[in-house]
Image 1 (cartoon, rainbow, N blue to C red):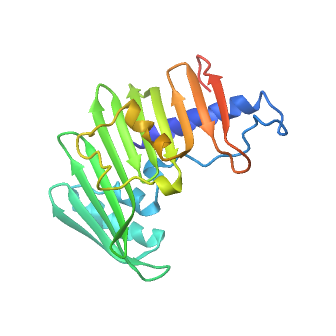
Image 2 (cartoon, rainbow, N blue to C red):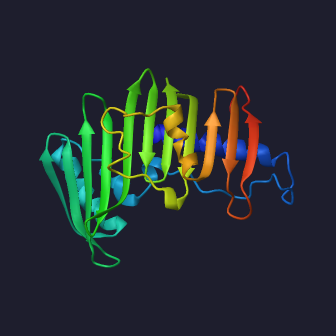
Amino acid sequence: MTEISEKINEMRDGAIDANNREHVESDSQYIAGAMPILLYCVSPAIICATGFSEDEMANNGITEAAGYVGITDAKAVRNGMYDYTLTGNRFSDGQAFEVHCLCAPDTGGLRILEKVGGSVTEFLEFIPLGDGKYALQTSLERAYVTYRDGELKSFIYTRAIDSARYSSETDSIYPVGGQSGLDWAEASSAGGRDEYVAFDGKTVKMEIKPFFGEAISAEVTVPEAGF
């Protein structure tokens, strides 16, 4: 999951750099900065929770790490096989904080819920679909990826606008992938989206809202040696 997220970021950033080499900064096609693709990095506490395992010593390490991401009185609990919870209080305001992690060993699926004051504030789902295909989802992001032998073969990534957030319950794809696929990854366009990036193995197509200005559409051919 980490490698896939990093490869998607590298491909998107390489395409932005290639696009910008063709335009001066004053050009309307110049992409002056863009939000990073988060996926598994969607929150520090969720990053911590990806380290849960059946190894009790490793889980003790998560309790220690929680302090570095603003969680006090942290406690890691193994609820059952591949079912874990990290609880504590948020240092910034004292609210009850919880991260619940579920793993599906038969599929390799992962689901992590982050809650503050009992309400879900973020989630991450990672589902291997077989044949080198994967689906990833957070409250704002979706990615449908083909990744084989350490190489990114293709992907579609979208980030919805804040008012079109996905629900951790009604939009969940855990544990087997639900309706995930190309259409699923593009579904955020129905409610509005801030970003669209698609790589078909040769070309990267992008619709990106930079930090300043209007959305920019661009298409970049990927060199055989990559970016």
